[in-house]
Image 1 (spheres, helix red, strand yellow):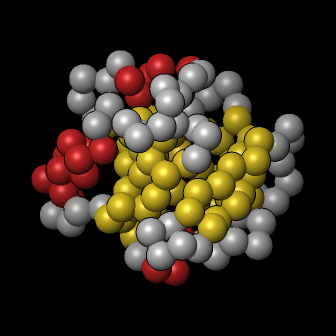
Image 2 (tube, one colour; image 1 turned 30 degrees about the horizontal axis):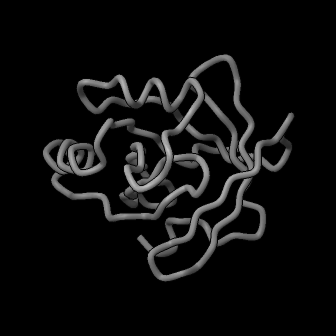
Length: 131
């Protein structure tokens, strides 16, 4: 197991991108939308890991659930969670998104009672390959 990525939440994606760029000197690039989840993201490569800015997607129906509510209520972008790569997941939740180049990524998540969660990229290419 190893850290896969960090997640910065932001009520607005453009604001989250600017927040990261102001602090790290590099701007995340648009990653895509999470269809059906009501969110979209931007990614910044950090070697074998990456930083994800996760925000609500105004082009989708309102997202539901605790994470969406947390993101919607953020006044400032903030570090929300840390993803750890693992193929041994308890109660996995399937997720997907389509990259701007049309490649569809599919993965599974397993949440904990802490800000830490686990991710299995299955057969999808890891996002750092294109960052």
